[in-house]
Image: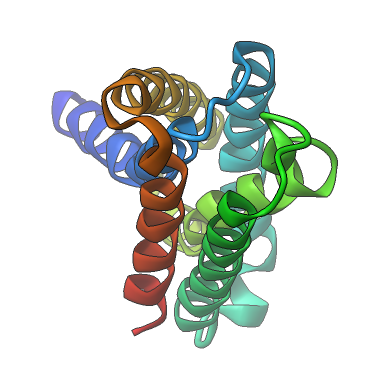
Length: 179
């Protein structure tokens, strides 16, 4: 029982660290706290939905989902990073341009898609599915918020280069996931 709980907590943190690292990079873009708050909630919901979807579709996609999810998430992160870098050179319109509308959904999907294959293993092991999925959602939400707050603090230290650095971090995370 304690062993399963410890495994669940570690797995929740491992899955939430993507959201933390990406939100850390995005937090350097002077993101409004309101947008960061909603982004954390959406990421948490996706971290609950993706493993649930993985459980349902586990038997159908089990052989290719892990590779596909990592590559797709990597391309999404890389694309978001490139957009952020190019936007850092463009005229400033909105401080939270990448967390509004489609940008919010791209962000949430890109950091949550790697939890999809976890659903396969949850379906194979006799774990409490609802507890697991809720744990993934709560931990990823908290880690996303922490990343935005820490990124915002780092932005104050780095000044004008923070948006460029944030985009570079997103690109690096995307390339790491792809390769």
